[in-house]
Image 1 (spheres, helix red, strand yellow):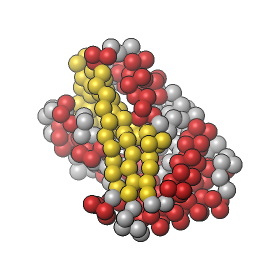
Image 2: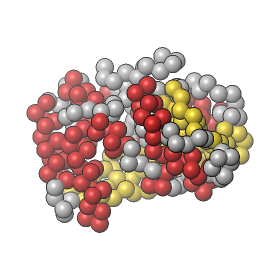
Image 3: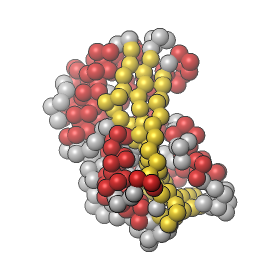
Image 4: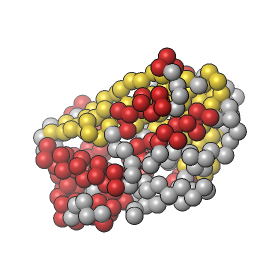
Length: 279
């Protein structure tokens, strides 16, 4: 059924992206400044942070620098291979601990951290509400749970709109086959309310990510990564295995992404949802 993640608590959620080289390379380009700017004003020297679904650890390393030696960042993921990548990324950070843990059953007492953070995590979970509740449980009163997720339905590009329409349809269908919500960004406020949080303790915002000629390197890397991921990742394999697309269709999508990456007039953008929940 795809890339089943074996967590310490036997969570069998299926990670649509997997951890192929093209996926990890793309995720490693994330920083706290380009991916968690909405959360940074609440991080102070000495803060303790739980970074859920840390991936290769690039955001974790930035958090560690921001909170300083008096603070501490605990980074968790469920996949052993990516945990090793995160340890390598943060080996110079004396205030980081990287652990294997399951967000559905966090191995920490109540009120353990000043804040908890999850970047592009809830969209991959079969029960994002339970994960959000568990993150709230381990945060101290007055702290924040910060979650950011993409809304894949908002992803549009030009000039080859046919490629993007097909890719988006295949990707969303594959995610839903894995019992996940690819448009999680639009539901973050609703899920926050369902944790029992009052509207006055929720700040919901959006940010548009743009790939265009104004940063051609950024744009090309995005296109080339998705060209690779469409055929050489768990997503590409799952789409074919599930009967959502043929191998030929995935190769056509890959070629379309590659052509777009090589087209300096190419434009692509999408919306992220961002929620801050005050505990």
